[in-house]
Length: 67
Image 1 (cartoon, one colour):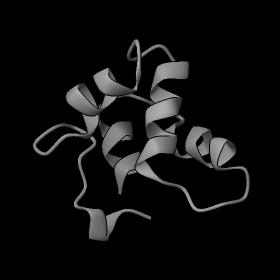
Image 2 (image 1 turned 120 degrees about the horizontal axis):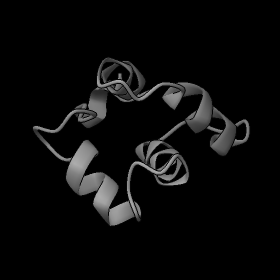
Image 3 (image 1 turned 180 degrees about the vertical axis):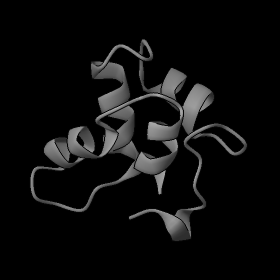
């Protein structure tokens, strides 16, 4: 799961942040991306995907494994 991978990379609160942003809906990669921008880990969504969520990066999880 993305949150677990980000926690291991010393980025705490990813699940809680993404859950808050989902506002009761399904949590997506986009919610994790928005959390990372809000938390100051990246300047924008494009940077988040490039640094954290792209294949081979810290938070990458194949789409079938994302909750």
